[in-house]
Image 1: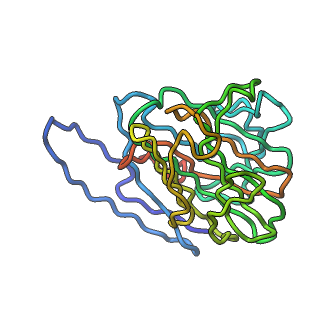
Image 2: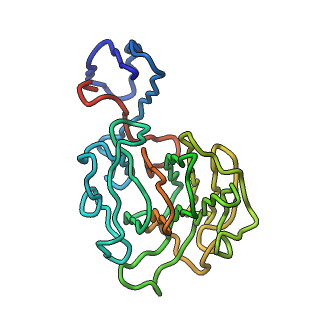
Length: 261
């Protein structure tokens, strides 16, 4: 395993307005495997909804995500949940294991203008079987599917070996990229609510650019309403280090819990 060695073990500074302070940070790896680490800015004092993230590491391994961290089952279904897992994790120890009956939702509120970047790290095992979905909705009303409206819907298909921009549905869209298995891959959706646009990237490759309100369902709202991780009966797919932030901002620092930052 990798082993992080950080010096100094903590940093602190009182910063006067319009000034810059430079401090040195040494990061070493004394373990026997590659260490992946990131430092992200946390904009303290900003509205809470500016930054959202979840790396699933604050939950017990093997625990049900419904009822933790704002996660819920689609339309309130207790059968649509997912467990945390240490079988795969980009930031140890946990990720979310999306499989079988999982239809896991996290709602958001207040995202009605401006530019936003939604990021999710995904791991599809080499032996993955089925079709699984990553979905962003501009409108989500639990228990009222007729009120829901989809903006982003990606289908990951083991049979075709492709990632499909799922318009018009049934994993049959014409915008595709090769499916990547056996490694962590970034899903990134760059959303401009003021311009009503979105750009969807998979593995740092542009999959599609279109409107936010009309791309999937049509007639949607200028709003980021929810994410939906839908297994659709497929085998395990893992998600980690998910975030919603303004461009240029990031929202977490991945390091072992015993390292104070």
